[in-house]
Length: 264
Image 1: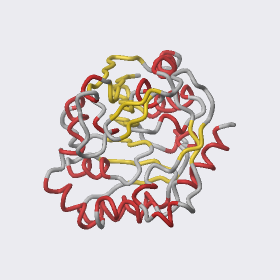
Image 2: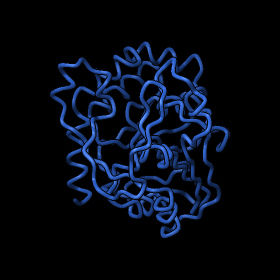
Image 3: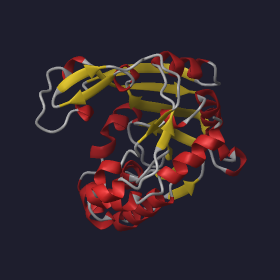
Image 4: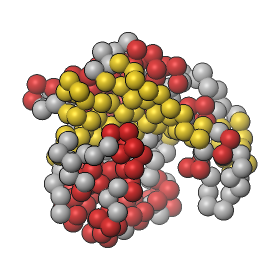
């Protein structure tokens, strides 16, 4: 499978009632905008700890989905661009931005198809949470980012820790280890927002296709690009995998996410 084939599959997957799914999860764009305006730092506090004040900064949110992080940055004074495959995500994001009283540039396109020459350079590029697996090769992605950053720009990748996402399942508060960390095969999986839709609608959804990466594969993709790693962090806690009310003691002992920060 090449990147074009994967992107075409996932473009179909992410244009199946995503707007309805986000309304089910967050409410209407107007309602969610009120929540974000009440505390614009809340959804992006993790990144603000790294990058500080974003007022006046140019931020690129790759695979930015429904735009909640982008709108939060915009409310804090940033000039924000989102790139994503989904028209449904774009619709929710732009309505969210309008309701919040901020503007976004939202480009519906494969990241690797971006024309660098047609874009201004960015101070901050963010790629986060369940997105690396949408690429058949990470090296071209990181090379593209290196060309989109200005001389002092930083690139932040944050994603679910593969030690957990590739090997474990969580059911009724129990941890089940039945995966293969070194598996390289492509997988067909439910669209990430499927559970937010009515069951009869879920049954009609076409699946996405992903390729999960080990941590060393991600790090090596950075090393082989024109980017310089300046920091890596593994974040404690797998609370994202446990349903409400489940015991958290096991989750507290596992790496939930990882973050890599790089510059040009």
